[in-house]
Length: 202
Image (cartoon, rainbow, N blue to C red; front, side, top):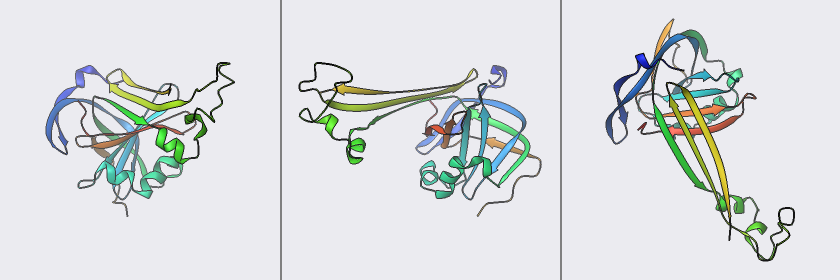
């Protein structure tokens, strides 16, 4: 959670122009991570899960990070990451509420899952006895992630319808997410559940 008393308006430097939004502030000792093109921190949930924030270096976009092998290595092997330091981190994080929608049909078909889309080959007998001409017409996946003073809420559902790193800071660092950034939510086992890009917090 963040203190509402420390929330204040600041400028977020979006790719298509500056905008004003509410930023939450929090300071305290934490582990600060860095790589060739990014810096990162995490916020722990009560159940042991975590939300990770990856701030691209100046001149680097979140999309550049998504294509960076080092970033993918960080997301998969955070516990073994050498470039980290325990220090005071002054966090400045915008409130945001983002959603995404994906059509999974093409991806599933590329993986070889094709029978479920063909009424002549699909088999839904475990779910229904009326199996004549039943097939999937679409598979859509929606996700929503919100963060505010009360914490982070993340939800996802799938609808299937029929038819060279810089030197670390010394003892304190300002971690200000005032430009497009990457985030990830991980489970208790460390597996990544959500990954997203915040281009516009509001």
